[in-house]
Length: 338
Image (cartoon, rainbow, N blue to C red):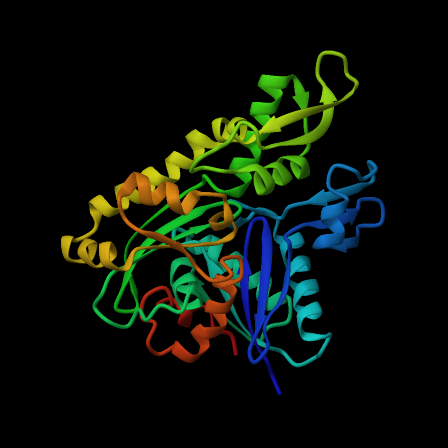
């Protein structure tokens, strides 16, 4: 029997859900290539471990940038390997729903569809990220009531107001997980003259971020290369320093939510005030972000259950709702292949 597969094609992580099984795979969107033999050495977690540590002839690639494909060939390999992993190497061609950012162009959409078709799908559907996130969060969107979703991924943050199965208004900014990692690297370099890698920056973000009430006494030790001496060095970094590093980037996300609310019809804003703001995506786990949004905007904010898997769960749920989802699924006919 053919399986239905839902893919959250994220810049930082790819999450795959299978009908009847739920989420079966959540791995970094990274692929390692042997440049001499042009063969794939590793994908996902194994490739992530090689980041910043591989010899010259091994290239560790992130084939997605800011939510869209930047390397067609490597994205096809990544999707194919992950789909094989998720389906247990079965030969039955699945139907696939892939989630894409709400601002994606037709050319970029076509690249996503081609990648999925070449990975062995018999039919491909595209769904907008905010719609998938809402479905995954278990929100009933069919009624004439406004809901606001903030999906913070690795490459983009999508903010959208959804009502009656469609996107009423949306915004997207490229301030997201990877931008926050880069901000931490810049801060540590400027403040401590220490060069750190992507993985260390990500670890600091996960372990030390407190956006609501940062404490200077909460600290962790990190290692890198001293830029003056060129030698290894260990330093202590605090929650307060991480807050300083991330403040501008995070408040740009908060300002995007505020701008969206200003553009939203007043009736729907009343609904959003009652229903609150839903946070999804990996960035929803940033310490104190929900409280910061609540305090800054005066609208209660809550984190979706399993925010990382929210979009992937929504893509699978979309198969049952294909006839209802008028918006976000409107161009499906263009991408159906017999």
